Length: 320
Length: 228
Image (tube, rainbow over all chains, first blue to last red):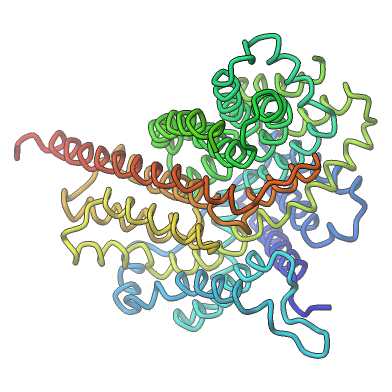
């Protein structure tokens, strides 16, 4: 039994998506207000009521959300925010206090991860121990908002409007990570890994230990680029290449293989638009016109780090 | 062999610039169907995994009202002013410092920052402010380049810091994966072997940010040839 758990924040996050849907419905100038409102309504409902619905129903809801998003009928509202002069004046008035709420979030997240799990009385814990650090982060965000209201003396509606402006800017990309994680699970269930192992064995001279390492790292990077998710790629490529060839055939160290292999996958994450929450969400958050601007900035780093990871694994995986 | 068709669906869907969310779902549905699952079973699996992974989305959603509110009251303008006061900083240095902070914090298991939490409200405006302080008005291309590098610092810093911490998803996922195969692999060993790449990542970012600063200076010179 616990007072605060992630479920509470699912309701909060969902309610806020529903509020966005509500604003869109009220906006008579919005060209696609009904379909856009339906999109945010379904999304909010999946967060609030997801736990009590059957997974099959949620699956169909997610499919509906994806079809709506792909139809191009989900559009942003016209932005209404303060002008630059007004913001300069309030920046002058509030000064560095403007940073406080933003700094509260990490502080609460740290302190919460360390201590909140220990607070309990009569068998009732304050915060659920599962996912403690994410729960603490959410608590931090809510407290930061409260502090923001105190500082700015803004009306409640201001935060909801401003937040929903940013929420609409992110749009469907918001739930792409969740869909990708689900895809990884489905791939594992369908046995995609075994098929990959057979293919690699036929295509490459895996009797050489160094070829196995190069194939594994490259597989992690390329597969991560295709899936947009290194975790999903890890299950497929480690099952299909890493374990049969590096560990079983050549006696490599599985801890070194896994750690460096995952990081090779991350090099792929840096270079793919499929990793939307890392590479596309910031493009929208930062209002860049070139959808690939972040990826372009990351490619040189990713390639250098990939080469480093392959060399490191070649040197260490069969030695320690 | 036919089971790999899902990967083709992703590649094709993406090449055709279809909506990635729909492409991902289509890939899952195709993979499930060719391996003998019913449509309902696929939807059930998707729904179940979607629900257990809701936590991935939550921090982004809950940070947006805070960021939106602070922006309305001049957060970015204030950050710009701060940098103008400290004339020493360059955009590249701001971004490199953030990379280091991000790596260290996440290696300690702390989630400081985030694209919505820090890059948009703090780091990108700080870096832009630094460049403006050095070079005056910036061209649009320069602004895009600075913001993109700030986002890159977040990604590189968090990816190559998180594998050092044992309670973070990646390490737990690896452990769970090996356990399912009845293999005993130490989480500490996996965390330790993340450190060399973390150091290499910081070195790579310090190279990139130095290049960024040079590019900004070159763009600024090109923008006002009469003063050069």
